[in-house]
Image (tube, rainbow, N blue to C red; front, side, top):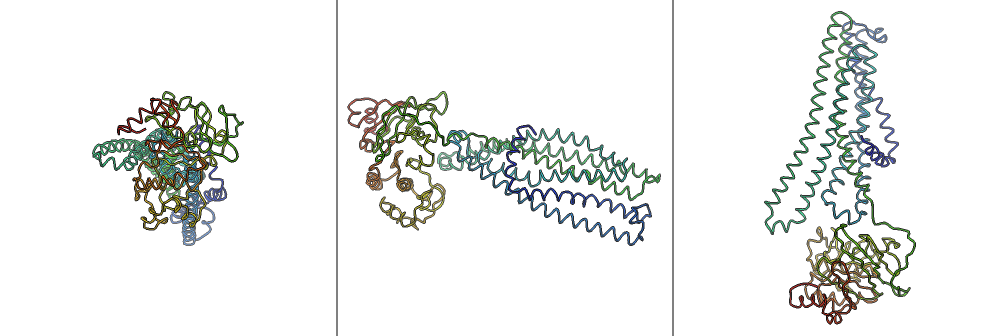
Length: 598
């Protein structure tokens, strides 16, 4: 283990604090289990010595042959039953603690992943992230369940067996223990190789899951453009790479097992040869030789299990490394206690009028060499309806993401009602901002749950709000109204119906600022006309920031901001901008001719 491994394991160790009592009991049981296993070869050897009339311990020497054999058989049976009972109890508790451990880690991983900014998720494929939350956490559970505690149990067993053998006959005992040295060194060398190979397996498995998930998400495109064969070939190459990586771990794993088996057989053969010579020359009894043969087999059994568990532990350390890498990802979007900064623009927000938005010299880039927003400054007054237009890639959607603090600007400050948005608690900030995106996402569950989300609204109130928003027609079409179950991503609704629900769930929250990214793009004319009437009422006394692609939406705005390459190049009303004959006028002319969107 490297120093980083120790630090990561130590950090994960805090998840076991709640189970300290049970862990202590598990460790204490290791000693009687090891003693019960170590005494069995000794009892068998003593039984043979009694039957052959060889020297035995004093307690057996004072008994008749029949009584001594009965006592030994009874003790052997008791040791077997005791060991089985204690091992069963121990295994149950180990697995129970392991499952609670992984449940806590998985919950923290999920919470941490959800809290990470979009910047992290932009570069991390969903399939790779899922692998860390599922496969890697399961590997960690396996390490704890049958690895870490098992290693401790095997070490205790080895120690008890080693001491017992040396006490019975120090010559054969030391000889058998000496055979452990080459095995131990080889295991440690192979484990280092296995660790590197196992990390590659995890990486390739993550890529395999990412490819599979991507093809399922884009299944409609795959089928429409007949990409089944090409994508199948790509997936096959990924699968072959993964198989090759797995074969590497199999080689090292099987090498360890084969070497231990060879050494154990050689040790038993050597004990038979040397012990047989000693029995022939009456230097040792047959019972003692039998004891050592059984011990030689049992001596290598914990070592064999240790090798297997070390393999699991190496896989677990790989999982710990990958889980640690995820947990070490810095959460960029946090609540800060900042000294209030006065905006460069004059702020007219009052206690009675909320919704003032100010961008003050804001610059942002997803990558250092590709600036998206450059020195952007503007002010939106409370209650003002502002449209954002510009060519594709001009930074319109990025601007909304910055306002919602999904990303942090590299420079400049954004204010809401005269306050730096970084000073506003994230929960409160996003409650003030109601966002309707063009690509609507609905969760699995019923319609009511998707409308409520985090709002505490009873069924009666929700029904009234839906009626006010004109959703009655849509709800009447659904089999169970608000209780209708939605498939993944709302697959049993049309695009327009999903967008209608998206607008409704924002309206329910009564936001201060309404942000819309072409919210009516997928609606039929009848549905759009109904919604436009409700939107007019929804926009009353609220600030509206609308990404618009249609002239009808743009013309109704109080002011239009025109962006190009992240810079504000024009602003004004529809008539003013048309009269200027600039970029906006060109885009409007093209749209009127059906050649482009605003």
